[in-house]
Image (cartoon, rainbow, N blue to C red; front, side, top):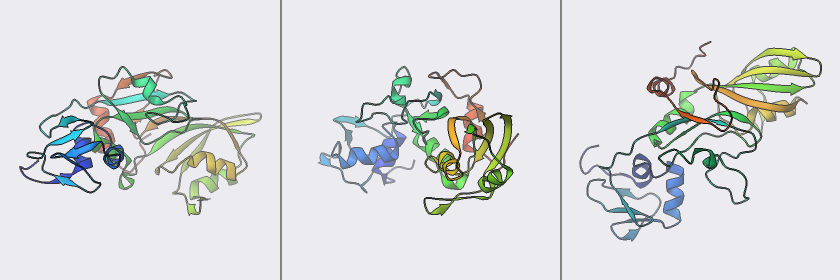
Length: 248
């Protein structure tokens, strides 16, 4: 970063590992951030080299380079993908208390779903993985009832109108058929809220289980529910330089 180059306050906070850019904006709006003794406002820019920035009374500095953590968590069902919850529900933050830094979720996984959830304290990494232009694909193992027809699979593949907007084409293949149920592999390249569940609901299908098993070329593997591990440097590289193709 060049000397005297001004940056947005929330970017500096994310770069220093304080919180994601979105959460940093919430801290600014709540009056928890001061710049040179004055309460900061959304949109403020600062000189990281000369301005004095305090978050909850503690100074941050662009010269401070926190260790970045890149975490793979196996989120169990019943946990919400937030760091706190006003309704008292179980949060993924409880599962990563022993990480030696405050990490936050990269993207989301709804309460009733399970599987691979990335967490980090590196704002740039989070932005690269979730940016729509990246189209980093996500792989899900989905159980549906009572079964699924070829016509229904085709509808999911070509795109469906959900919440007034057509979904991007998905890849769907049948993994297993049993009486009264069917297991699918579904690959998405967009991050719309509860997309698979909404598509299945529109098709008249029940989804008793939904598990994310991979993000790009990074796979959940045998990691147990509720457990986490750090990503390898190669996994981090694969996620941030992900091609827009599916690798089988």
